[in-house]
Amino acid sequence: MEHAPLILDVAGTRLTAADRRRLAHPLTGGVILFARNWETRAQLLELTSAIKAVRDDLLICVDHEGGRVQRFRTDGFTHLPPMSALGAMWMQDGKGGPGSGAMGATNAATAAGYVLASELRACGVDFSFTPVLDLDWGGSTVIGDRAFHADPRVVALLAKSLVHGMLQAGMAHCGKHFPGHGFVVADSHTDIPVDRRSLKAILQDDAAPYAWLRSTLTSVMPAHVIYPKVDSRPAGFSRKWLQDILRGRLGFDGAIFSDDLSMEGARRIDGRLVGYADAAVAALQAGCDLVLLCNQSLDEGRAVDALLDGLAERQAQGQWQASQDSESRRVALLPQTLPQAWDDLMFQPAYLQALEMLP
View: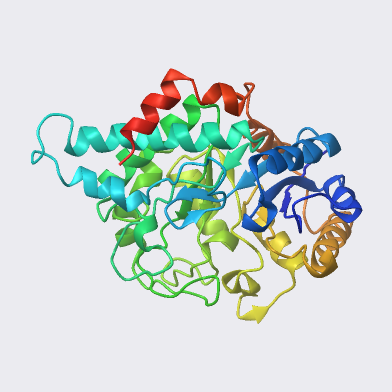
């Protein structure tokens, strides 16, 4: 049975022979792009076409949220607002006349989703890791203005509007970082954040958007945060969080991505430093369908090869089993419609109207 759980990166603006070999590996399910993979729209389209020429079912992903997390910013790409700008619009409700406030904010969120997805798709990108569903508790610098708002109800409604726009443009999406990264101050890229609140408090506030959006979200990414009152493992390596709570209690049936396995928050499991292959197995055993390894293709990509070889070896040893359900969830994230070409998009009424509605 096929199951391609790995999302890898590529080093540069064009594929190398080593990139092609890794992308052709049966365990590779997709690619995540970064700013270093970008020069121009024409170059990006060449790169995405070359990736699809290796395997047309590879999922081409990017972190493209708006604000400071937007990988492609030049050669015509719209500078999207940070999500906090939509939350600020919401707070103007009743102060600016008709069309302002909550309705204006939800319309602007739909417009942002449509612009984001249609521009990416015109360049051959399939999928963006957005929206951030974390609450803005005011202390987290890594989340900060990436969050819509402090109120989970506002977050859920603005996120639902944003993903509506993305789906109109034919793109799936990812709610992150389950069950919530906004309360902790530490950054899981460089640290292992710990959130000591009770399960009840987390479900009532931070995780509430996931419950409300369970039939809307196409995928979810858990946080590399430890919630010791619930489990000693970070959420992305915890069966309790992913199977019992997200799948069981909240009823979510879409794809689950691990966050980047190279982040500090993913390197220590049960108090010990682990390698990438062991971290990937732990994430898959906990209930992730797909696992990401980012920024490791540089320096000849030895870490990527070690992960591919290590995961294949552990599969042969029976340490993890391929999952048809996981593979079906991965394939479901691929676009089902043809994208608009960029030049056509520039004259499309829906796109032009969406641009006007952005804050």
